[in-house]
View 1 (cartoon, rainbow, N blue to C red):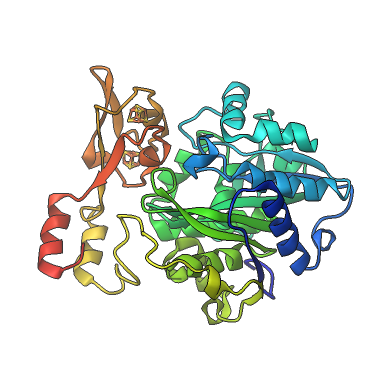
View 2: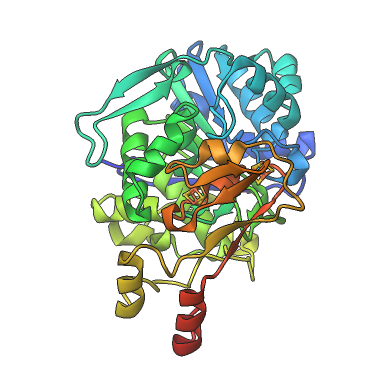
Length: 395
Ligand code: SF4
Ligand code: SF4
């Protein structure tokens, strides 16, 4: 079953990435849940799984802030755990020791590892993780530090997401799928609900012991990499990967059931009362909630889609004619070719020294948008979407 039967989420105010304040808030949320030893055996081997994505500087708000990762490492080290920080970055970046070194450095993780005695993972091997109970995926290729850990602690970042609407605890675990295996999963699970179900299977298979979420400064708009930082002032913690996402979504005004991972869990009976009975501890969420949080440009509003619009549903079935399509701003492109490498269906080719997208082949997964380090890939409505928007008022 998805997550623990009793779903509890702790919240603490944290207004800045000030070391003292972050350390206090992280300790506070974990203590509210019963203390670190309620989830992690003293002296055990722990994998700390942040959101490394493209290894951008902390102020870009794409990665889990190093101060939050640091505070978690300090807590784990205080009970004698050996800690490894590991993630496989977005699929357009090669999963090699050299690229990991530069990404850890850019994200500020090398410094916190040195300060806390945590290790940074450079072993880029992976193994097949069987999961016969999986509804959609029966096995996963998974990075080796997962196999070698007694516990996994996810330290995610609260962000909007062009394709999955929200990226928090559940989506974070997609990072244990190594390098170029990620786009293969995108190609295999093309529908968002299908993809959400696969992510739910992955979380059930790996079963992290504890979730923390950096929502001190969240990302709004076209996340997970090209949105804008938005101060939210919160740290969240939970043993349950669905509950923490539900509560974070409520804070920023995303209807939880519109998020495919949460929807998948609800459809499996793992979210009774749509999460209304999640137990909240700590600071009052009403004082932490944001108003006017900007949604991704791909989002059409609560419940809009196949359920409410036959016409739009039909259009989706006809091949995503309605979905926004990616376009490359060649004046900004730095010709790194990451978009070409990540595209799961090879819709991006190299032509005359620049990337070109074959729109008819594109499945609108937005991996290219996510991976572009300079924001040179935007999304645009096609003619069909503009016409339907005029007729229906939906856009
Ligand atoms: S569009 Fe972005 S990801 Fe693609 S080659 Fe240019 S800079 Fe790299
Ligand atoms: S070109 Fe289309 S299919 Fe390829 S990565 Fe971009 S959005 Fe996905």
